[in-house]
Length: 420
Image (cartoon, rainbow, N blue to C red; front, side, top):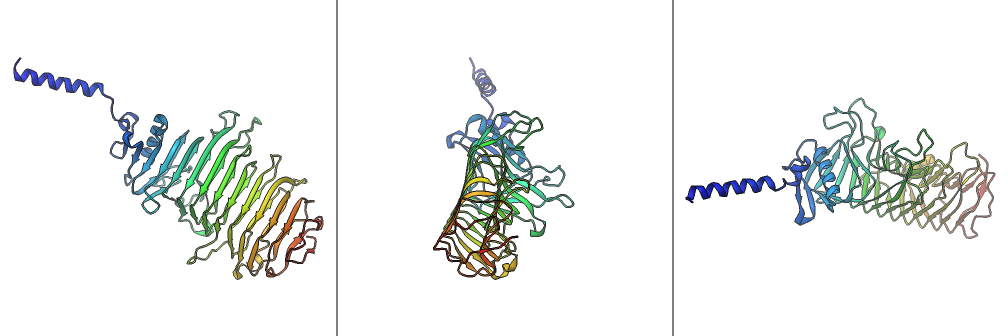
């Protein structure tokens, strides 16, 4: 056998081997191999920015990680553009190279304003983390409604069955911000819950599980976290900063256990807030009681509003039973709030709770604690708070249907009873 024959057979052998060997994972799944790289040795899939819309590559990388149970999808340094990614059952971590290094820009109408409005980033079910990056929820296109959800945490879509869905999500050391102007801003940063709590056939569908938000910063949103989870799902919001946000946390139609601990609600030193920061829990219906803990937070109120508010529907005559604890918070009321600050703590439609050991400083609040007179509310304990003598109208403002048996003896205030 001559040399040329040996060479040809060797070449044929190599070509045959190349045909039999599988293509790289990115090629098999349609990922662009120039920007999506599967590295089994590193236990991660790496995604690189294209300078254009990166939605297809991010979608492909998350699907590949879900299919192969890869633990990490890592976004490289640089800026990514995302206009529409929807992923089911992701079990892993989506992480950047650092908050100052990796930026995810979200476009609800597409990068070139050519698509119908959609949630830029949606996770359905799963157990995942998002960490070490900055996420920017950008303005909507000119002439379109500017309200949208940046990141949605849902179960299956409406009409996909009646069984509950389960989702575990954790946001860790991220920054989320928006470029919307305050007067126009109607953006929600993160929404968690069933996409539709009720369907037309009467089928109730709920989202169970847990939502953690930890050591992250949120700036400029109309609403930061809207959680509507059920079955005593757990929502833990701890050690975060909320700056220039109208509503930091909102929940309604829920039966989740919520802890809001060790957060800072207010502007930073250089940019004074133009609106107050409020935590609202509202729309009482016939769901299981909630356990809500609001402890060791700092609130800066300088454009009115409340640190904590419960709201009931007008048609709900019977207050809802809940275990609410508002304790050991520092609430600073700045002069600019003026008489528009109706109440620092505003309670309506809920029985059973504790307001204890809170320190309120500053001036210009009309009421320290406001209890509505619209419903007979009982089971509350107000004790050990220090209002500092500063609220300009009343400390506890008690409606005509409310008794005084829950006011602690050492309360630093004078109780005034007055109807609405």
